[in-house]
Image (cartoon, rainbow, N blue to C red; front, top):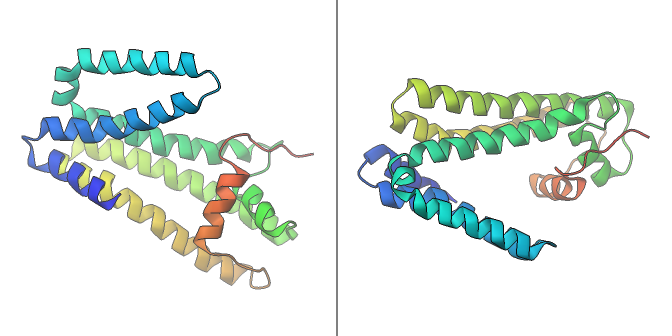
Length: 202
């Protein structure tokens, strides 16, 4: 991932590497889409859609190559906006906040303080991810491309890691009696607890 980010940044910041930049931006997305289409229950439909998309990319390759930074911006905005939405939509009164759901998966039950804290953390993640998306768009429109690229490829990831570290420290201070787990367990909980179906209160 670090090598990918570095190569993408150099392609954007230095200029004159439109083909490499476009391949870096579009290639991984196309590969993931192909894998998902192949594993889909509607394989024929999925592969047909993928083939149509591939033909469209080939037909507009010149335009995509010339504007690959825009394609990368759209990907970045899509990733962070959807992640923010995944957290934010669980804050509705009839739903279980996403961080609460992850914590319940790890611990089974939570105290009232922990329930309140995990809701607040869900709000914090919603704001953090939304702010990253907004900052990326602002830098793309107002700053040199190399500045935006540095933020998109490195700064955003550093902010996410920093958020994990700060949240871990705050949680240990505010909930000293709670058994605490590391980042790996949290990631596993997110995979099982899910960014998919939204849990509802019983």
